[in-house]
Image (cartoon, rainbow, N blue to C red):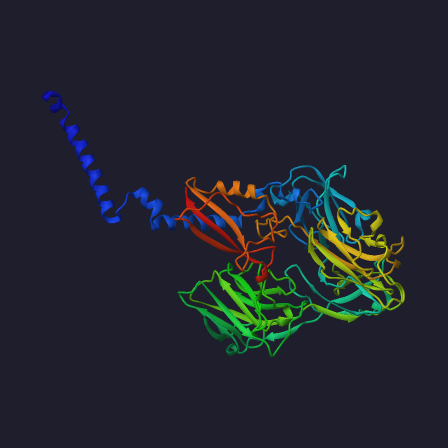
Amino acid sequence: MSSKLSENEHGLTYTLEAILGAILIISTVLFFSNSLPYVAQKTGEHSKVQLMNIGRDNLDLIEVTPVVDINPGYWAGLGIIYRNYTLVADKKFVMPGENVTFTVYTLGYTEILYHNLSLKRSVLGFGPKSETDIGIINGTMVTNFSSVGDFNVRAIDDDESTWSNYVTIKVGHYFLDTDISGIYSGGDLNVSGVVYDSTGSGIPELSIEILDSSKDVISESIPPVNYTSYGRVIDDCEYFELWTSSGTLWWNSTNISKNHSISVYSDSSDSDFWLEKNISTTYNFDKNDILSFYFFSINGNETIDMELSNSSDNITGKLTWNNTISLSSGWNKINTILKYPNNVKGNIKIEDADTIEIKVSNITKNEYYLFDNFIAGEGEFSFIWPLEKEKATYYLRARDSNDNTSNQHRMVFAIDGLIVSDKYVIYEGETTQIRLISDEKHFKDLLPTSKFDINLISYNQYDTNKIYLSDPIDPKIVPITAYTAGDYYIFYGESSVNDPAAGIKTNTILIKVLPSDGKNTLYSDSNCGGINITQLNDYMRLNMPPYVNYNLYLINPDGTLCDDCPEFEEMINGYPTGEAVTVNKLIHLNQGSELGFMRELRMVLWYK
C-alpha cells in the first residue's frame, strides 16, 4: 500500500493542487458576488441586462428582416398582386442604342428566375395591341432601343399563363418630364415640365414641339410653343458670409463663374462637414426645378447629400436627395431633380423649402472644398395649350438644333369633360378614385363604367384582375384598384382606329402603379405585414436562446393594443416571471413616415 502510494504521490499532489485551485476560484466568486456564477446569470442584475440585449437584438432583427424570409410565399398568397414575376430594369431613361439590363425575379425579389420567358414591348398607353417581341429572357437580358419614345416592357410565358409587371422605359437624347397627360378645353390649359439628360442636368434652349397622332409637328407648333430655360441663379457664391458651415468658410479665386467660389476648410478632426443657406427672400422652388451647383472634389470618392427644409414652426421635416453620379477630382456639376426626393419627412413640400443644406462625407482632411454657381430651373418649360377645338392624341417632345430629340410624351386633348384622380401614384392593392368634373353640357356621369378605356382597351374587354373599377360611389366618382404594377393611360369614351382619342369624352389621366413586393420588411411593406403570427414566432425561435421565453405585442401611442394590422395578434408564449424585462422599439407602419403611423413593438422576456 505504501509502495503504491509512493508510486503515485506526484499524481496525487497534482490532483490536490487542482482541487485547491478550484476551491479558491469558487471562494473568490462567492466573496465578491455572494452567489454561484450560474445563479448570477439567471437571477441577478447581469441577467436582466442580458435579457434586454437579447430582446433589443431580436427587435432589430424583426425590423430589418425581409418579409419573404419569414414567409417565402407571402406575396403570392396575399391577394393584392396579379402577376407571377417581378421585372426590373437598371435604367428608366436611355439614349437610342444605349444598353439596358432587364432582370426577372420571383415575387418579393427572393431570387432571380432562370426560366425562358418572352420579353415584349409596347408603346406606352397602347397596351398589348402594339406589343412586339424583344427576345427571350432567362434571368437577365441586355438589350437596347433604337427609336425614341415611351415604351412598356413586360416578361410573359409563351402560353401567356404567367407574366410580370410592366416596366416603363423612356428613350431619347433628352428626357422630357411632365405630370400632364391630358388637357380639357374648359380647364387649366397650362402645360409645364422639365427636360434633362442622363446626368440629371437641365438642358436649356431646346425647342418644345407638339406632334399629332402620326408624329408630325402640328402647324400651331411652328415656331415651337416654348424653349427650355437657362434657369435662375440662386447664389453665385461671391459672398461666403451668406452661408454657415461646420467647417471654416472663406472665398477662393478658383471658380466656375464670376470671380470667386465658396471655400470650406475641414481640419484634422473632421470626417465630414455641412454647408447651409436660407433662401427665403430670393427664390421659391417648384416641382419642376432642378437645383444644380458645382463642387470641387479632392479625392473623387466624396458622398454628397442635399436637404431642403423650412425655417417656420408650422412646417416640419425635410426633403433629402443623395447624389448618385460618380465624381472625378476637380469640378463636378451636381444636379438634384427636386421632383424625386430619396426621403420625405414631415409635412414639408418642395414649394415650402427655404433652407438648403449640403452634407459632404468621405472627405480628405485638411483640404479646401469649393462650391460655386447654384442654379434652379435649368431646362424648365411652360406654355398655354394652343388648340381648342379638336379632341385628339398629341405628343410632346424637345428638340435641339441638330435635330436630336427627347422621348415623346403622349397627351390627349378633350372638349367634353375633365376627369381627375385623388392619387396618381399608388401601390398594387391600393385604391384611388376617379372623379368627373363637368359643366354637364356634354355628359353628366361616368356611367356605364364599361366605357372606360385603359391603355386603349375598353374596360368591358379588359382583364379586371389587373385593374378593377368598383361600383360608382355616385355617378361622378368611380373607385379604381390596381393589382399589376405598370403605367396606365385612362380616359372615358371610345377609341377609334385612326386616332385612338377621336371618340373620347374626357381627357386622359396617367396612373402609375408601383410594385408592392419590394424588399420590404415585416412592418414597412405597403400592407402592414399581414403575416401569420405562428410563422413569425417560428422564425424568431431560430434566433432566440433556448433558455429564454418571450411575448410580443404591437402597441398604439395611447398604450392600447394595436389593431391596424388585423393579422398581427398578441404573440403569447407563456406567463412572465417576476424577473422578466421589457424592451421596445418604435416602428412605422404602411411605409408611412408620419407620426400617425408610428407604433411600438414591445417584447417581454424572461428565463425559463
